[in-house]
Image (tube, rainbow, N blue to C red; front, side, top):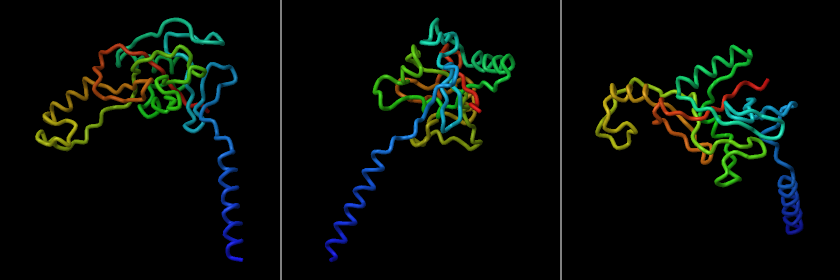
Length: 189
């Protein structure tokens, strides 16, 4: 009798696992009604299908990506916010990283969602954080090894965060004068 119960429990557990595996995963992204935006359903963010400088023509992105240094990128986001009344901003590194489709190795962004996406680094609005603590220039565990606290603050002022939209890698040592493409984001709802 105990053996029969074990078999029944094992079959029940297998059926439960099979039904969980057969259940379709909830989609991460949806296309807006007009097709101009991709909505991140979990983060509730709206992403233009094209980077700044390119235009969505209903089928693909056309034109050339506009390149911005970090100051120009922040100013452009603010100008677009004022012009359209939507809260456009530079995305955080983690938000940009969420766009990278890990199931498409070496592809980066899903070309069906973000066609003609530049395969390079993009500006992020993530700020370097000054913890106010002292930097130990002799600690190899410290990412600022060899820098004084004053020099570290200067480096944070001169460098910004960027994300490689092919690999998802984020770096905080990109010179803010570097011209990079810009993909703005806003709240979806």
